[in-house]
Amino acid sequence: MKRVSLVLSLAIVAGFTTQAVNAQTLKTVKDRGILSCGVSQGLPGFSAPDDKGNWTGLDVDICRAIAAAVFDDATKVKFVPLSAKDRFTALQSGEIDVLSRNTTWTVSRDTSLGANFTGVTYYDGQGFLVKKSLKVNSALELNSASICVQTGTTNEQNVADYFKGNNMKYEVIAFGTADEAIKAYESGRCDVFTSDVSQLYAQRLKLATPADHGVLPEVISKEPLGPLVRHGDDQWFDIVKWTLFAMLNAEELGINQSNVLEMGKSDKPELKRVFGTDGNLGEQLGLTKDWVTRIVKAVGNYGESFDRNVGAGSKLGIARGLNQLWNKGGIQYAPPIR
Image (cartoon, rainbow, N blue to C red; front, side, top):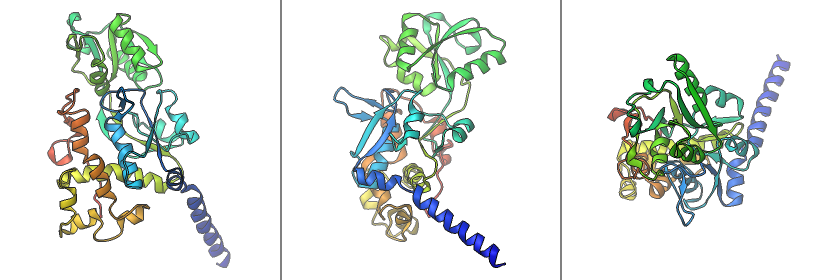
């Protein structure tokens, strides 16, 4: 019996030791004084720099929200533009602290890359962009089409599955970056450009005459996009995960950038927990009591971020759709802060 107890004790100690050794990312970020965030090489609405090098987008806001939670300063972020091929290596090597780059959550990526997905920032699906002059109204009319696609993405496999499943022939023309693929499509090297529907809307803005191109109605895959962190640091995993959850919960509770300070004075039990005036939930994460206030004050709630970057308040004008909150007809849902 003593031997069993000793073994259990050693196992528990070893577990705590491993956890303590691995829980280094927050300390590293604080010591460095800046968050290193992997983003796309330029996808409007999600992560793109302006002509002065200022990054904006839905994925960018997640990084700024994390910085706000940690530093109370959303500007303390270094954005590292990464190709689809290089994004996972940058995370694995420690070059970046979090990857927030329109990346699809799949079982193979969740189990083979040494990384954890922390949630879904955008529920997407793959589609097709075509020239309206082709007079194609359905993806089922694309038999024998040539298709431009970006390598290192889930798009190639999805195209293969869709065309094989519908007994259609096709030719893939693959490119290293989305910009190369869309330029090839515009020049006529292929009939169709395929990617996640959100990316089709974003890339269409780069064309000389966007109105001459349309997105077909078919959505051929599930593409839940979200941030990733490295395996082995549960504290950092929790911080990134709950940063997104804080933005979603804030929208559901009616907390936004303009009223966050006023609502922080509320006596409602639920709001007192959210704002840290009751309990120590923020400190349990390794943050401060006012972590939610910091996040919303800096970037707003999820709905505000969606609207200005990809929704009605943006050039993309994408409808909320599945990304609407669960109680408004969508599937966006965050665990409660309690």
